[in-house]
Image (cartoon, rainbow, N blue to C red; front, side):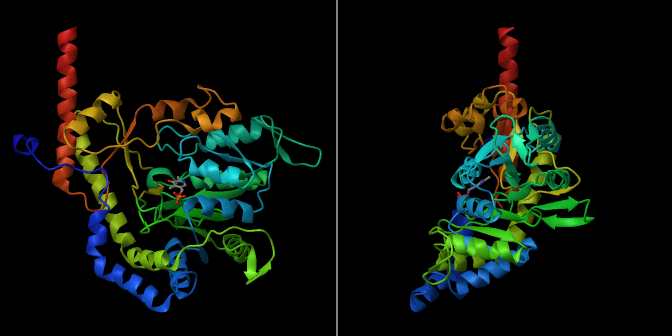
Length: 409
Ligand SMILES: *Cc1c(COP(=O)(O)O)cnc(C)c1O
């Protein structure tokens, strides 16, 4: 142990340099090819990547778009979510989830999360649909909170682990709601569908799903990017129109759309990196197992992530819970260990959503979790000795706190 405590190097929260340096030759070739053909927008690089990404996700189609936020917005719009509708999601997510809902003209409403998985709690969704909604004279489901029609649900597969989709899909079916997955943190995550009696991929369970290729995601572009996956040919066609000014054919605009395409260069770069995604995800799972071994072997204050039997998570983030988070984080920082909080303020308590009228106490699980979570270093290139150092420093922190307590007592 003592040999490691003097480990000099720092352990970053994330290493985005190494994977790009390793693939520099192939990535540069994509750029050269685009330069020589001036194929910057659309074309074969985009189409080939879309085909490969759809195959990876187990869907018929993937449509490349400019970001994960646009992916979710276009997916909701293509599914028929209209201005004034309510879309149900969770308060424990990145704000892009609710931004996309608002940008589609809809109103986000929240249900609380499961304390063990940190994802949407299907029981809370059921309580919301059964007790907080009514039917109007034409049979539409109406939110009592806002008086508006509820038309869609967005479960978020946060930190790389899918939400418990079977009960969510069943409830949605029962209440006539569309399900759009926010899979922006879950490229390659798997869920054991009891309904289908097989493992299925994140992004293949809802009517459509949104992915982000922001550089830090498990599959990241060298810039911005996103995709919508779906197996519905009509939805795919609508999303293609929405990303390209509402045109199915050049200058024939069926609807007003957006400038929301995926660059050809980014598609080419993503295609190169996609070949490595399964291996990178495997290494992330392996790193998570190593952390778990370390934390299980010590009397630690660390609450490791919970992976249900129906889940194969891809650990976009490695999120643990601790009692004295702020003190631990500043201690880790002093030891050269990067850490983060995803996310410190639940969406219903953000200033941006003051007008939604929620208050502290509305989503107790999310609020409790938000004050205790900390994300430790996690990436495919993370080394076992670096993880051992992280675990040792957490133990050292705990010992220091315990002797402090003993003195003050
Ligand atoms: C990253 C992310 C998004 C948005 O993706 P961008 O590509 O940054 O627009 C949406 N939802 C979640 C949960 C994310 O993590």
